[in-house]
Image (cartoon, rainbow, N blue to C red):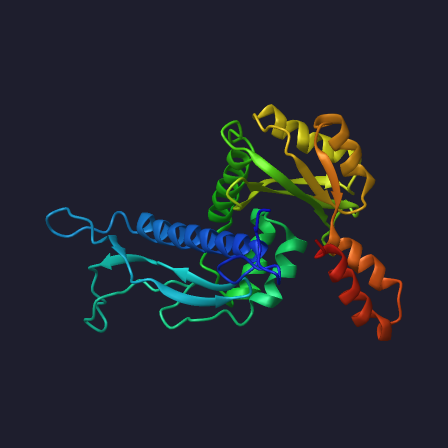
Length: 294
């Protein structure tokens, strides 16, 4: 039997796979925003030159990495550095670039828990993203609508590349499938995110696909599975999911040879939800004895 997670549902590093995915996504998005901010600053001052014609404001590598606490957990940041050789005529001191996104003193994000719902509600549009960032970073976010548009296009391109990668060289022994429903006021109230996580023969887990769908309909799941098959994914031995009929209908259509298994996490939650709270601890222990039995 493969052991892919610890008994408490965590990965060998101590966190859940979802937490690791969120943390890595936060790190990449922050790094991209910092790069965009520095590039915009340097481009704005490209005409500033010394007597020999050399530019006074240029890139100068990166600062030492530092840990920043966010709602996604601890994220390591490596901010780009700027060499600004201009001199302030009033004070006689060298001018310095200071990031409005990540000031030198910043070690945590106190407002990130407030901004995440706004980002979901506003979406990643150039007109609405900036007001949301202003609530996160203060009165001046340091990102113009044009920069936000470029970042949005970059993230969309990253997702498109991820969803178009070749799966022919990977064998997934089994997969987990679930639909994540976002509790926000979206135009499409019944939209959800369809998630497919695969387990390789060595026990390692990885995100296979992430796609928006309508509820958890059979057609939405079938589109996702057909796309995986188109990219070379072979039928896993086993698929694990909750009782949503849409996934099982799609699985029978696209990978009919794959065996089915109900998810014990969903099954346990459904059972406990039908019992009074006083009886839930004993029932949970009994259910654990069932699925841990020889």
